[in-house]
Length: 306
Image (cartoon, rainbow, N blue to C red; front, side, top):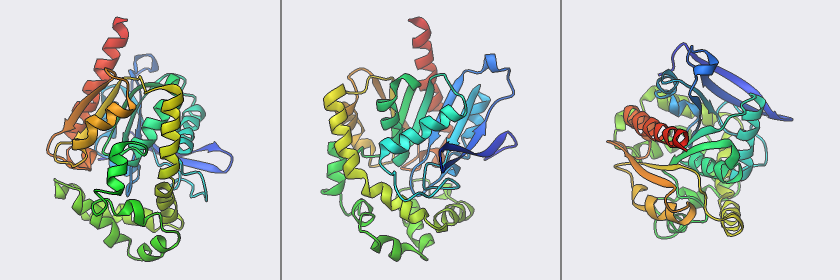
């Protein structure tokens, strides 16, 4: 859970857009810090989803940042800008605002995984490693199957795209709607307590929050086109990558084939968070930390050996 070393702040990424973020930094001299870890949350969550892992990651010597992406949590609720390329740019601007010049270790979950992949693809010079998962990346076969073959499981991929109606039907019923996802997609169902659910419900009851969340889904088809064009022009991503899924999650089945489509052969590893389904950082934070830090340490060791 959050501890006394966590600071909650807001930065202006660009004119009129404010990005809220949580920061935790160990009380070490700056020259002894190992690096920066950027944690990117998913839906229907906020940066709060990393509450169990932020301080433990920082305690291992990293400056840890967990922003609320645009439209979520305490960040701005703009009318536009929900392609993953724009949302990735927001976070690059946040790093610039915080004067972070070094390469960062990017960890993204769910929609945050889509943003993380896009950030690494568009801004490779700013990324030391990528850790992403629990998301069918738009433009891949896994994504197309989730819109068709798996449409009942992934009904929200279509429902969220219905203009006005989706927001109208969910407004006032946020607790029922969010509970559906947390209960359906969890293995450790005790991981999201009533207090945790209250936190998320309050976040998505805010004016504009549902609209922004659903706009992210409406942007998937544009995201898909952008990813296909990017790979066609630039090739597959060739940054050290960990594809992280819950060992009880349905997404683990497509992880290998999805990574093959968008990542350079030999550039990635596959790993599982034990005893967890979709909500990996909440269902088993210890395993999430172990897999994530183990990967980062291997990347750093390999970098030193070259």
